[in-house]
Length: 482
Image (cartoon, rainbow, N blue to C red; front, top):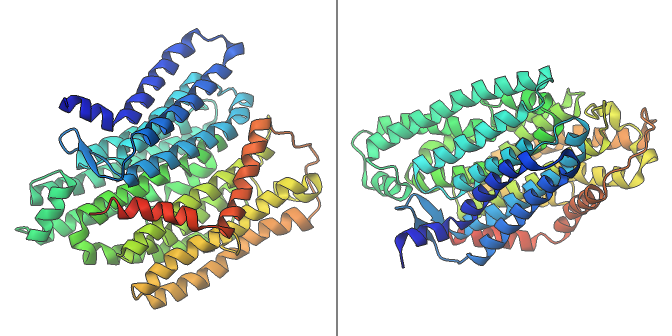
């Protein structure tokens, strides 16, 4: 078989998404304003087509393309399918919001699809250059999306902060990669791993490079002390953009950690393990304690995200296969909860009104018992209250850390989880025990009502039956980590 054909076959989902993004970009020029919904439908069909191609080309074997720069393994396929689903939900939740604010344009959908393409490239990156290209493609699209509402000064400020800090983090990551290349003589992840196992001339330079790489990765995750951008971007960006920034890219960030730390730098685990422990502890402390003081719901969820990243790192620094599986399970659950949480903010927002303060949730139960119940499930899951899936996710990563011998860290994390439950339960108290400040009727689009209902109930259903999702994560990790 022709090698070029093999390469295209391995990257067929990426080729399809890129082609459709170009079709939508050009087609949007000729679509009348009244038929703008066609762009939305084409975007959803693109995600469906990419999912079908990914499933059709899936095998349990690990395959390489483009001279080893691109990997097609079960972990990549599973993460891509999860990414398609998350982006599809983002588009459903965002449609009414962006229409009412004059952002329902082809550029929005093209930028979202190209950002997703960057995520896909990151997920399948088997070379430092491939990983970096995917990261930059994703980042540049996110910067543009945050600033898409050009007349919104707060959004423009958030985009500038995101861009400046993101450029700094990218530079640190690239500097670390250059040191890694200098010490190992290769950009290929497998060859870097082999070179480290066989010994390098100067390990001190390698460790310095590792520090820069961990710093760059921590920024993309939003872990302390590189979390400065998270609350400002979450608060300043239009809620539809915050929904995207806070959800699907976490799958790509998870893949970045797996490819760089677990696969390429496995031989330096004792060096990066301590760094991750410090970041995990600080993220959980600062995230939980700072969230308590917030009155803005988006900022509260931003600090909540920092706390969740701390728990996610518990699976990584355990250094075991069970830990990596638990981390993949956790990031999947986190994205599901984030989609629901910001979906509720979008649901309650309307033209000229952003439902982003905690007081805007007061008396939600009297306005709509159904949506108050869904929000209750989401808050319970984020707090880790059984029988929701959030409890099982926290249990999985803490169990992996406990099995690896980190007893005191697990005790600390449990205590902080109890502390963090306060600000989630505060939301429930506002919805059920306070008088409503807003009497407007809640009338979502039919597709949003359906998806939001499924999203909220999935948090409960998966909590009652988490085995399937855990088995999927185990299959992805065990067949990809060599």
